[in-house]
Image 1 (tube, rainbow, N blue to C red):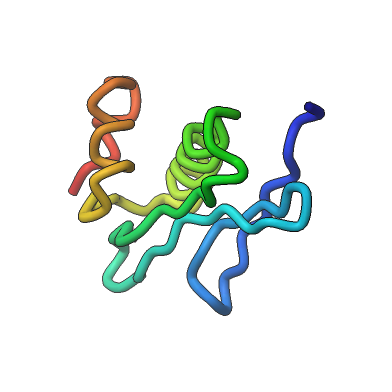
Image 2 (tube, one colour):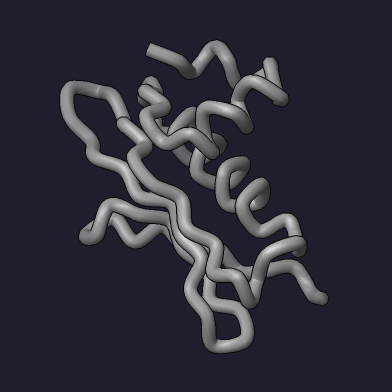
Amino acid sequence: MSEPIITHVAEFQRFETIVDGHVALTEYRQANGVRTFIHTLVPPELEGRGLGGKLARFALDDTRAAGLKVIARCPFIKAWIGKHPDYADLLA
């Protein structure tokens, strides 16, 4: 599988990738310099390809570049940050 193209769709407050006609995404709400990640979805057809992790890394790198902090209400994003302590500094 080639690397997925992940896009920040700011008007819908989400990061997404489309693979084999299926959309994987992570959604957030942004206010007061904080992105609160609320939901990550990887369809069953795309599971096991590491897309959730790629979405998390891309979204958190974008958040860092924007100078924002993170609240991880999404269990997947929270667990991913827990496994990647170099992103813990983003937590609000």
